[in-house]
Amino acid sequence: MRGFRTAALAALILLLSGCGDDVPAKRGRQRPMPGGVATGAPSPVSLPTSLASPAPAGPRFDPSSIEIGYGPCEGQCPVFTITLFADGRGIFDGKGAGPFTDMDTTTLVGSRTFKVSPQTYREVVAALEPVRPSGRRMIVENEPGECADHIPDGASRSIAWAGEAGRSDALHWATGCVEPRYAPIQRSINSALAKLPVIEWIGLTRRSSAIE
Image (tube, rainbow, N blue to C red):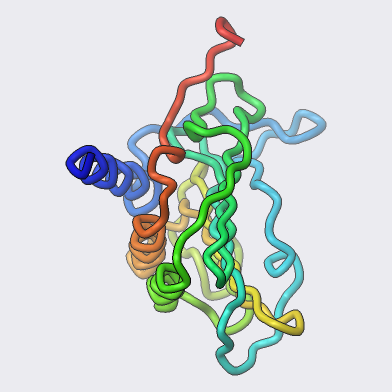
């Protein structure tokens, strides 16, 4: 059993690294926007509230919860969110197939709860701390000071740290922004996910209209 989990963990790290650190080997078709207008980037999943509304910068706080989100791309990219609370409660939410029936998704589609120790929660917080902004940081095309080198059809990563009295920090990274300075984001996320019991749920499955 231990050997199986070690192999599964290694496969997860390779999978997730391939969707973020490197330039995609293949570029898929452009996703149509409502009204038939095409765009070079996939439609993002809903952002956490802390990303939708700017948070004021301030002193560091101990987060009472953390949310990690993966958005869609035109290649083999799992789409999911994980919410983890300080007491160790966790919620995994695997997304559906999206606009294209052949889009790759997580192995688990839907929500499932899990539990880790408070110590594991603190280890996840520590793994993500190196990339935590003070307030909100958006790494997307046309954002001042960000994303000078951009490739279309990339996925996205989001992390939200929530605290008491509405305090929050938030990071959103469009992985089409491929500058080396962004590579630590994926490494920190990989380190955090490796500490959670979600390996079996973050696989890739191919949905086909022939079997739906």
